[in-house]
Length: 298
Image (cartoon, rainbow, N blue to C red):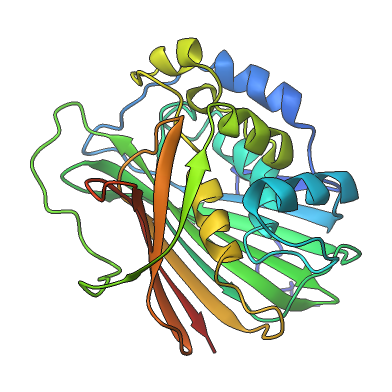
């Protein structure tokens, strides 16, 4: 009897399988004790890393906290950015594998691309898969892309690509490639206060307790004078001011430009509507752009 194709091939070494979302506290302890290098040599090769959760579920208390801190209305429909929270533990565990060449603390979140094919709800149950394959060397350092998909009843409902960077030792001057070119004139829609404790409040909702977001003393250990807001809070807060409560199929893209230090007052700008909304989050005085984004209904 002929062998099934691929039956004799060994499983990839860098693979994680979980029945449920992993506990985050042990992962943070591993990250704090991580002694891998911060930077990747220019000639380093990076293999494929995979992760899978067989059954994800939404904690209703976490969802409620997330909705409040990000400005979403109470609903059993998950905000388009919320599934990123469901995947956070799997992302951490995947990047904490000893074969991954750089340490998790110090990686810089660059951009996100999310496509929601249909809405997910608080009682949705399904699978999460993520994978990372290779690296791109740039003037700023080594850039990685984490791919993620959520399936319910075998159907892909939500997909994400997340770009992040391990900085080069000497940063060469490079133009920031504008994946999202906002028009020169956007309407000022709202001003928001990003309070000093925002990082801690968002951490309780997201599970992302990266020290750069929590306290001045922990932020200073990573080179920041003050804590900085989570990039995914900036994106979620922007979406809460834009998202259509009825339409389900949408594409969301964002590039994180400059850190948002806490506390700060920020201005949210957007165009006047249609199937494609261009938006921006910037300092109240307009001198610093924190986030450029586009939300497109498909």
